[in-house]
Length: 146
Picture (cartoon, one colour):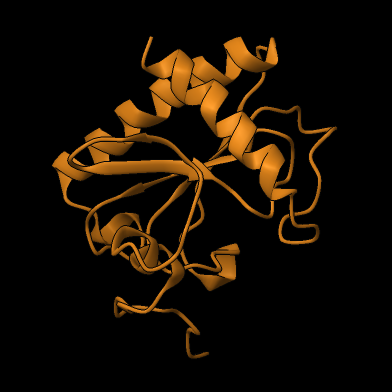
């Protein structure tokens, strides 16, 4: 039997925990008492947003039901905004659990990518322009808060 190379203990020093603590800047799209949505700095397509719970959870198995529901509702708001801002119907929703599945930040998160599977770029290859991310975050936030 092979040993799993799985992150099972929450690391308070992961980048998303640092963002929640205010130690790392980010481009906020939406926030409520249970979730935070922000621009992915290494997007697979323009408008790539991450939604995270404000709970210390490595993956879906660790997520409390009320936080899972909150992530889903925030994802719905963000997707509606992405469809309006980018004038497209297609939004890829992706969630990876464990390193074998491709999870690289071990804080539960959902990717929302306005794209089609044929247009999707590779993740973590090219960093987006900071000003572009700020502009897109403002446009999405304006739609959500309208």
